Length: 351
Image (cartoon, rainbow, N blue to C red; front, top):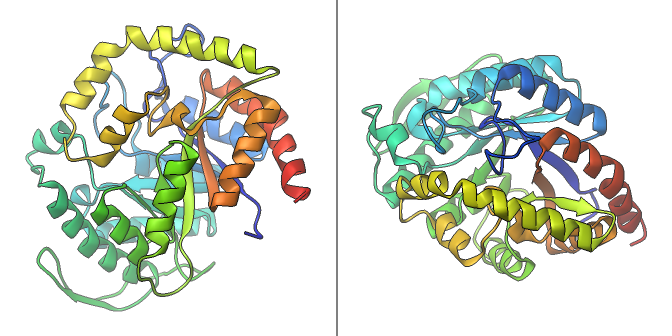
């Protein structure tokens, strides 16, 4: 645990990451807003950004949705230091095509690119496109073959592969990364097939925000699985509400819950269109929260000092990257950088 904890932010590909009714956070998934947001994040010292992938907005088709891969390429060209992670649903891109795109963004970014494999949960996105929505474990079987092909191609290897879903014959992509072995591979998902995939083929496993005892159990399970190569790293999603005092933070949280009631119909629609076998929705039912991917269930709500201390506790569990959400996003990502990160760094430096 010698390396410093890395702080990242979710890009605003949906338009925001909590209520669509917040008076100070209009729903805006435009490229221009995302460009400003991530350039600000880089200036503030954040280490990474994650661009989730959807083709249509799961909160309602009336809302805009930023395209992940074109935006990732543009952000790679505009930024200098921040890591760009693009989520990918394997059914949307053939592995050869995706690997070529990823290597190009790796070159544009000069070695700051990563892919985040997620095996899909929003059924209409694939069904309405005529792609079809396979059963949960079948999606992971497909995703495992897909990632084996992509990993080899990203590393510049000459790949031949025979599986149930892909037949690749003596394929190699040039140029490969001139900055490192290959772009980073992140994997999301908490079902048993997702854990097996992460242990086998990921560099970093993304965990949804949830209480520390649950995060500890997840890490212990995946760390016990067979693995070759470097140790697996762990990242955690969380929604932050930090203020001078815990009472102020709780007031903001209470207001967020009031706003959440206004968006309940949209959330219920999202859940109705999700795969009922997706483990994260069972986790969410156990831990009501603000934000997506576990959000405030990670417990990063409180005074600046309390939030910094809770982050240190996650670091001690093995979390190496925090991927954060806020609302209103830009002002709160600035607040966190100015108030919480320095406090956390002092705690980290003290022991």
